[in-house]
Length: 187
Length: 147
Image (cartoon, rainbow over all chains, first blue to last red; front, side, top):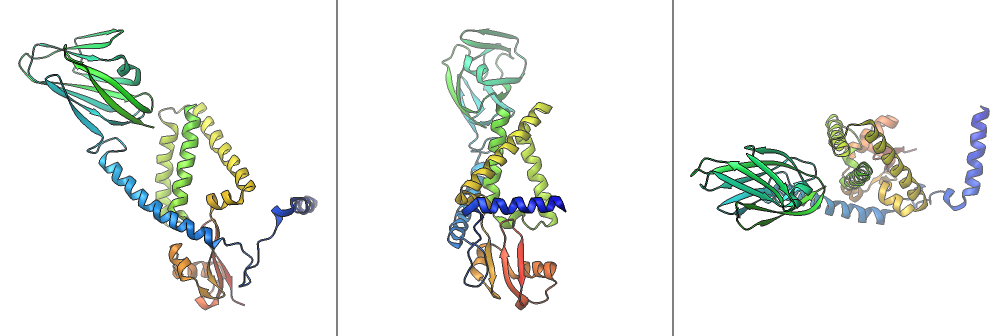
């Protein structure tokens, strides 16, 4: 009881000291003592309706692949040498993605060259088939694969982006011209 | 550092989405709303923790979330405008027995919900026994019965 009395006295003291903060809500015409802020609420209701449309557009964008992880716009197929590389144009931070390199029939040994940016921004989780040789130098990494001469070949590289944001790296096949690939990693 | 950024980002996203989704979404929990709440919590947990299940990470996240919450409580106290924006305001749905059709429609509340609250709070039987009905900031409907 003493504690309750003390707390009540403290509350009354706070109310006296608080001045305007302790001001009671205004009385409405209908007799209800409540600050309704109807104008603010009307604006907020309108903002909510706009936000729901934005939610819908966001879902459409996600279905199209603009938020990564599947969807027609999330991946890109870029011609590379005598083949093509299928890679995630929009990826997610620390999420598993895959680069797929498809090569036209060629010699027994094929080399994939990756710029230093590649290993700097992407973690390589897996490479299939395993390269026969891997050499890392100042100009990047060279992966050499044994393939069946005269047959098409496919190389799959599992990657996970290490940092969110824009990144780009260059890839080349054999002695071909390097091709810069752009990737946007969502947080 | 990542944990703090993750914590703040998830807090802000949840605050904005839940606020814009509207009071009706999670205010009066139906069994399915409860399941939805659990799914949202599970999804959020994964975004917060990432691959790091260490105790340090969870401690950093808990402290981050609590600190942001305390900080916002002071901001709301200092600025009534921010408080209105973040917490919302009460809406009078029935005034002196007269339903405000526009407020009911815009707040996505129907008279069934009002009568539900009237029955539960005061055991009222008819709508004309309700003098005031207010959709409170917390999402519940409070009823003042007619004299």
